[in-house]
Image (cartoon, rainbow, N blue to C red):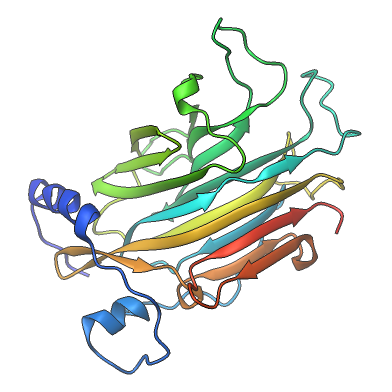
Length: 294
């Protein structure tokens, strides 16, 4: 697809679109060509998501991932979950922590570069600057893989400051959106707090089709790429209240619901580990519970 525009104009448009962008609920009538029906269902030229995708080993995770198409970002409002540890799986290298952890995040893949950006259950610093031995709060993290341009892989956390800590039961809104070539804007807000950062990601460009995702996970320490380890840990109480994708369409960035016709449903490594409750009224909403031994 040939996209011609000036970056400065598009960035200015994004600021307006973020505040005023169109939003609709899915309709059972997908035959209409009106823009409202295309937003609610699918665009006439929208690529459908894959029916299935292979799981990546190493963790228990629920992923909803879009097709690879003219997407520019993703945003969701969610309630943060509670992690219950398997007390037998303590981490001998870090007393006070365990080998299972919880995360809830967004991300994408563009030109072969994967990003994971969201909240991770983490250790914190107290008012005196002491680092806790155990994990006590959700804190923002940003991760990218390397890119063929030569950009190196990177992992980073937001500063360990109380204004960037969120807790189980908090309602937060987080999003990532392409604001100019190679720049993703990450924002998370809720409970009177806000964090934002422009994150360099060389594979993300307006002319490059991309996919975007939302993920709930039980991560396992030093287990990436390996079969999941048996655990009694579970994560409960997570809810996605609304989720939107941002799509480039006729020089606009349209905010569209990320309903099941717009994502591949992944429950890895097996469906039996997940309890997913969906909403009939809002098909971009769902509750997610993850069980290591279920």
